[in-house]
Length: 242
Ligand SMILES: O=P(O)(O)OC[C@H]1O[C@H](O[C@H]2O[C@H](CO)[C@@H](O)[C@H](O)[C@H]2O)[C@H](O)[C@@H](O)[C@@H]1O
Image (cartoon, rainbow, N blue to C red):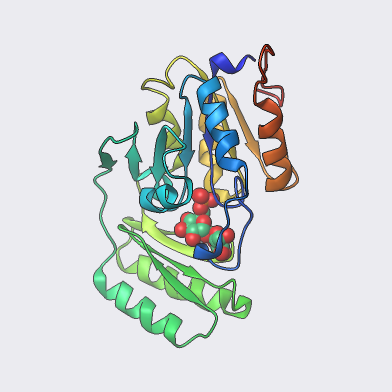
């Protein structure tokens, strides 16, 4: 499939960049931004990031490289550079849960709390033995407000977030608007939350690829991206099932 007919939608952590010890320790490898910019140009701007992180965090890592950014698993979407960040009307977790989550991680060395607008993440990468305990606490909170929030399994983390929007919703919404509309989406992710986006991309006639199934590591995936960058006078196509 020629790049002129493709839209690229990429997850960030564990896909474009390697997993790091903590969310702020992630490193954007040399050359990645240049590769993404070249692919954005080759696809007529149809390149977006769809992440569990906030739009602001993606901006901090990638600057103005992507045309569109969907953050917080699709709750917040900026459709074009410099445009407004549109937020889905979803509830935020009760502030009391945040207070209790802060107290909990303070009592468990190696764990950390990451705040998001609508919810929060309990990270246990630095204390794997706390996985079950943190899950139990997260499940007890969401039970208090049955049906409004859920516990999302993530990589060495449990995320408490509102029901109603997922990465598949973000794929569908982005693909309705220029420059994505009319193209075949190619979504690549690595995590459980990426499965909704993978399914949505396939439903729209495109491809949904996953690390480690389709690419063993983010590094191999980055190498594939690099191989797609057109050199002068060369006609490049996407050839990984897309
Ligand atoms: O949707 P993504 O772009 O893949 O973001 C998913 C979550 O990524 C971050 O947490 C994960 O990556 C960290 C850095 O490698 C790692 O330390 C942590 O254990 C992982 O869970 C981020 O902190 C979350 O907000 C994102 O939802």
